[in-house]
Image (cartoon, rainbow, N blue to C red; front, top):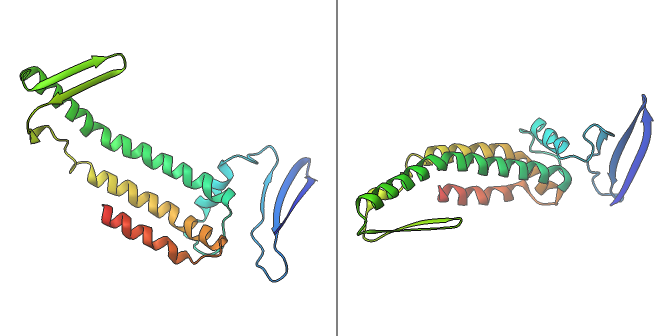
Length: 178
C-alpha cells in the first residue's frame, strides 16, 4: 500500500488529505481529510468519525480512526464503572470501621503514611459489599459500551481482511461473565 499526502490551499486555508492507494486488484481504503489547524492530528476527528457511523457495519476503519475512539470509550466506561462501584465500597469501608470500633478484640486497624488497613477475624457476611445494587449499573455501562464500539470493531476487522463475525465470540464471554 502506498501512502500519498497532498497539501494544497483551499479558500485561504491549507488542507491535508491522506489517501492510501492499494496495488492493482486490491480495494482502496477510505481517504481521511481534515482542515489543517482544525483538529488535524488530534483524537477528536476519529471519535467524530466513529460516532457518525454507529450503525454502519460495512466498510473499513484504519488503526488511526479506531484506537482513539476505542480507548476513549474504554476510559469513559472505566470511569463510569468506578462511579457505580464507589458508593457500595465506601459503605462497606464504613461498616468495617464501625465494626472495628465496636469489636476491638476481633479487628486490627493499621495506619501508616499513605496506608490504612482493617483486618477482621472470623466470618462476618454482614460486612460484605452489596454487589446486587452494583450489577444493574455495571450491566448498563457494558451494554452502552458494546453498542457504541460494535460497528467500529467490525469495520476494523474488515480493514484487517477478517470477517466481522469474529467480533461475536468476545460477546459470548462477556455474557457469561455477567
